[in-house]
Length: 117
Image (cartoon, rainbow, N blue to C red; front, side):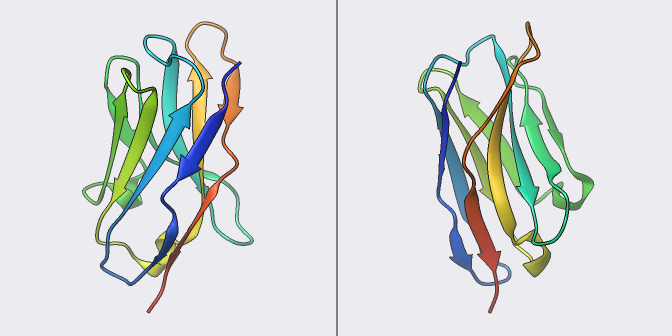
C-alpha cells in the first residue's frame, strides 16, 4: 500500500503558474504509473497527466504545452508544473498511483487550485 500526500495548491491569477507536488510513502520506482487527476465543481474527475515508470508522459489535450509532469524516483515524488493557467483549470487536483503489476490504485486527498482574478 502507498499513501500519497499532495501540496502546492492555491489561488493564482489567470496566466500565472503553480507547481503541485505529491509525496509517496514508499518507493515508486519501477512499480507505479503516477498521475494527476482533477475534478472541477459539479463535474466528473478527469485525467490530467501521467508519467510511467520509464518516464513516458501523456496529457489531457487541453493542458498540452502548458503543464509538465515529472517524477523523482529517488525522492518518491511526482510534480505537476502548471503554466499559463486559465479559470477552467480551477479544480481539486488529486495525485494518483497505479501499480503496473497488480493494477491496484491509490489516491491522495486532493489539493485545491483556483485560477481567478
